[in-house]
Length: 140
Image 1 (cartoon, rainbow, N blue to C red):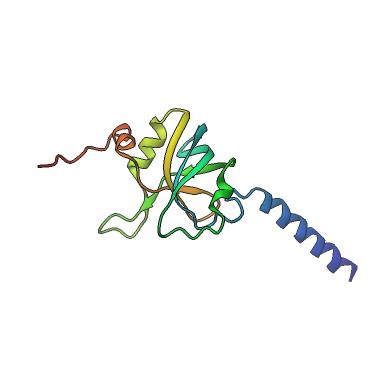
Image 2: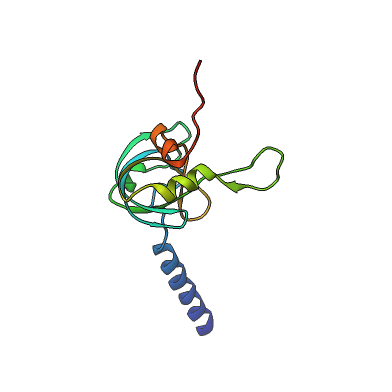
C-alpha cells in the first residue's frame, strides 16, 4: 500500500512538471487565427513570439479561450504539407525561409495549433512572402 502511494505521488509530480512546460496556454488548444506581437527570440525554424493581440479568429478556430494567448510567449514553427505524389509530410520551405529572414520585433502572424506543444504558421502575408523569396504570379 505504501509503495502504491509513493508511485502515485511520483506520477502526479511528474505530470505537474510537464504540464507546466506546455507552450499552448489553457483554453487555446485548437486556435486558428491572426495575432500581433513581438518576436523576442529565434532558433532554427522557431520564433518565440510574445502575443499582444488576437486580431481575428478563423472559422476553423476551436479554442475556447483564445484571448488567453495575450501576454504569453509562444513558440511558432513552420507549417507542414504533403507535396503531390509523395507520402511524407515536409516543412513548408517558404515558412522556413521567412523564419530565417524575419527580424526580431513587431509582427502579425496567421497561426494555428499543431501537433505537440507549439503553434505553426498558416499563411504568409504579401510582404512576408516577398521576404521569404516567394515569386508572385503576375495578374493579367
